[in-house]
Image 1 (cartoon, rainbow, N blue to C red):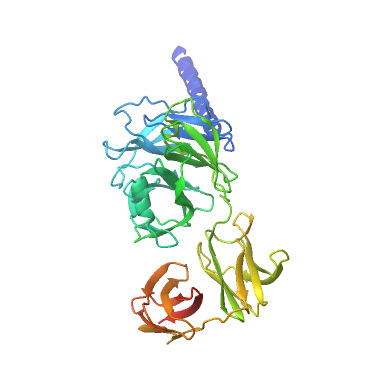
Image 2 (spheres, one colour):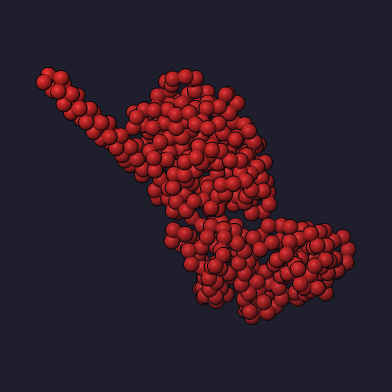
Length: 467
C-alpha cells in the first residue's frame, strides 16, 4: 500500500515537473521575442548572449553566459535567432580555432554542437531565413555558405558576388573584413561590409540559392566608401519590425540607427564590452530603407525624342509613373509603365517621350516600394530644339557577329554595351572616325543596350538583339 502511494506521488510530481518545464520553455521563448520593436540580441567574442534595448543601448539580463562545458569559446560570431524553434545559432569557436558551430536553446539552457561548416576561413556574419529552415554566413574570404537546419548539413554556395555595375562585392568583403548580414521578410539578404574607416550596404534579391551557383548580384544600397562614424568597424546589424537597421561598432561599444537618408544616429554606448561583436533580432520586416534608385538617365536622342532609362534596387509594388515639366515646378503625367511579369530587382525600364518642348525638359519617376512606401527619383533635365543632335545608326540588327555603329554628326569617342539589367558587357574606345565595329559574338542571346558617346560629349542610346 505504501509502495503504491509513493508511485502515485512520484507520478504526480513528475507530471507537475514536466508541466512546469513546458510552461518555462514557452515562457522563456515568449520572453526572448516579447518586444522585437525595442529588443535585439548581441553576442560577445567569449560566447555570451545579451538582450539590447535599442532605445538607449542598455543591456538586459544575460541569456547565455560565457560558461560552456567542453571547449571554451574562441572568437564567437555569426549569431542568428530562429523564430520557429526558438534557438540561437552561432559559431562558439570560429573556423580558424577548431570551429564549433552550435545551437543554444534558452528554454532548456542546452548547447548542441552541430555539423562542421563548409566555410574556408573565419566568419563575422550569420542569419536565418524567416521560415527557420536555413542559416547563411559569409566568411572573410567572401565565401557564401548555407546550413540546412533540418538536415544538419552545410553547402558552399558561391565565392563570386558582383554589384549592379559589375564591380566585385567579394573583393570589398575580403578587403574590409568585418560586417554582418540579415534577412528581411521578403527573403532578401542584406549585407553590411566594414573596416575601421568605411562601410557599405548591399542587398541580394530573394530567393537565395540553397545549392552551389556560379555567382550572385548584390545591389549596392550604400557605397562601401561611406565613412564609419568614429573610425571603428561596424560588426553587427539587426532589424526591428518597421525595417529600421541597427548597427553596432566592434571596438568602441556603440549602437547606431541607420536612417532613411543613410545617416547614422547614435543611440548609446554598451555597458557590456564587446556585446556589439555580432547582432540578431526576432524581426523580419517587409520594408527596409526607401527605394534606392540605381540609375535614372534622360537622353535627348534627337529633337523629337527623349529616352528615359531607370533601375531601382528592389521590386516596384505596381509600376512607374513618368512625369514631365517644362519649368521644373508644374508636373504632368506623360506615361505609366507596369512592372513586367518577370520583374527582378535591378531590371532596366525604358520610356520614350515623343515631341518634347523646345528648350529645357524636366523628368522624374514615381514608384512605390514592396511595402507601399512612395519614392520619387531625382530630376533629370534635357534641352531640345536648341542644337543639332548627332544621329547614330547601327547594323545589322539583330546581329550575330560584328555590330557596326555610325554617327553622321560627330566622331565617336566610346561605345558601351549593357545587358537589360544595366551591367556593362563590352566597352570600346574609338580613337578616330565616325564609325566603329564591335565583335559581339561572345555575348549570350538576348536584348542589349548600346550607348555611344561622341567627341562633342553627347550620349545616345540604341537597342539591339544578339542572335
